[in-house]
Image 1 (cartoon, helix red, strand yellow):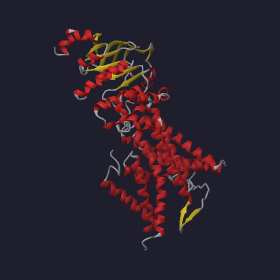
Image 2 (spheres, chains in turn yellow, purple; image 1 turned 120 degrees about the vertical axis):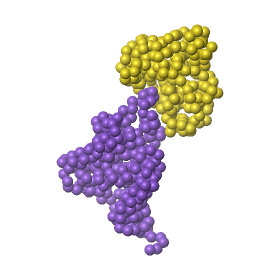
Image 3 (tube, chains in turn green, brown; image 1 turned 90 degrees about the vertical axis):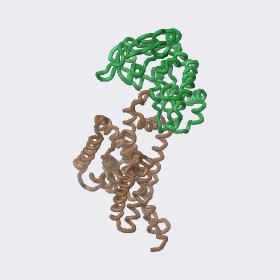
Length: 234
Length: 288
């Protein structure tokens, strides 16, 4: 579904990604794991065209994303839940969800998808008139994921959904991710919380200082000496 | 002076009617500032252009007044969009003071261009509406219409902002411009729409003011400073604050003008503004 071939990217004089190649197949959930500053967020930003790749190719279902402006990427079926959720803090939950359905193709299905998001997150229905900035961290993450689902994406990009949340809440967020995968969405998730995320996804890539260091199924990665020593402290 | 003074009541009602139009002007300026973060110092000059548009289409070309007004609103809306695309957009990333200076430049450009094209003579569309007599008070029908239409316009803007996708995007973009592309929103398109809406409100105000005032190239100076002060008084970018401030300011002008003398109304209003700047510099409802 999503293909990256030798993608390099950076900011000014700083190069964040070095010839990264990865693939996400339809129906799969894939994680990109790695330490802080490895380039994980940059990777998602390149896919969403928030920054341009310096070289390499990105394609969605065989259609290249080169020369596609950032605001049209969502039309290719890619929805991005950004780092720190980035809700519209002064708007209500429902207005945030409405923004997720902004593109014309999504507007026609607004009522249907709103019902779906509310059935997935009953808490959001209870809080639909609440100002998003007053939600708890976990609720904000639900709202941000719900907002992304409103566009009816094929591929969901999740940037550190567990970041900044209390340990108890982190558990429930990964449970949420598991449910979303079960609903049939293809998911590319970026995480620092390696142990937890590997329990949820099918496959993963290890990104270190902008380079793919390792890739394989979750079981393979959990079993690798590199991951065990450097990241799981075993 | 009796406790119940019919003329005082008349002044209060007139202040209320004036407040409606001032609130409409403040709404346009607030909308632009709240969303794009740029103050259009030249806002009242757009109103001036709108007044000339009504005059030329109605009195010179002989179009019916409703059509002339519709054309005026649409022209000023288009002017607002052009102003954004060619003047504001290139300086969006510039220092606020430079943005202010650029729109200040547009103010004098529009004034000078209007003088060149339309001349300095005062013009009037020659539509005089009757004064209404109501329980011993005289109220200007033109002011009453202006008040009602201004209120209607504001309700329309409110519904647009709260009930439509583009309106929701306009409210959202002022909070987080950078992630709008992830919603599939072309930020510049929203800015142009907002500018056209702000321009359209200036055009609507022009249609209401042209019923009460003569038109000349410097007419913008009659409303520009007051509008700006009301917007600051309400809290820059705070639409509800601007609405409230417009009515407070109008009462100072109207009641102050009645109790003392007409010029005193303005003196009191501006004194009130200065005092408020010491007491609440962020504005009545402002946070920014």
